[in-house]
Image (tube, rainbow, N blue to C red; front, side):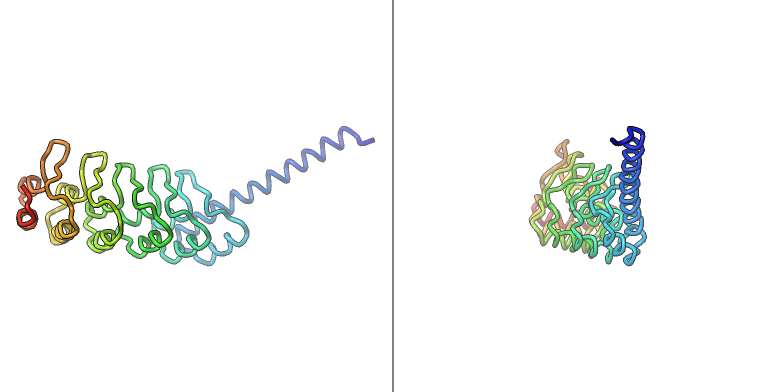
Length: 223
């Protein structure tokens, strides 16, 4: 007959072993996120090989893929996607690898995320699709590329703004934002779709004194 004390001791030892294993996996998961953020490809490959999870998240909800995208670590992103990283997984502030790449103008990563099945209808914390912040920040080539996809060019965010409105309201009227307005108009953006108060893109351009943008919108039938 087994001693009750020995059974308890063995049970505690088994529990301690399980806890150690779980802590080991958790440690490798966090190490993966850290290595991804630093662009350390060899460490990322090693950690994946020993069982670190591409689905794991850090204290702010970032996966390794989001962390890598945050620092524009293109090769790490490529590795993580190949390992099954979810390009649509969003962190605590609703950034995904896809949305973050669009907002930052990280075109190489954006292409990788779209090739991996990025959800073009996904939105950030402001309710904006990837095209809207790309227009806001003046990422011309990112906008040009997104306009070749099936993304909704007239999507309205939580502020009541389309990509066209955001390019004007939050843009500086310089060459980059002017070119973005040109691209949006050429792609068929609704030039008279106003904000919640009914103020149109052309009216906003006039208020801001953006003459080149005014000319583009007027020629396209803006009112």
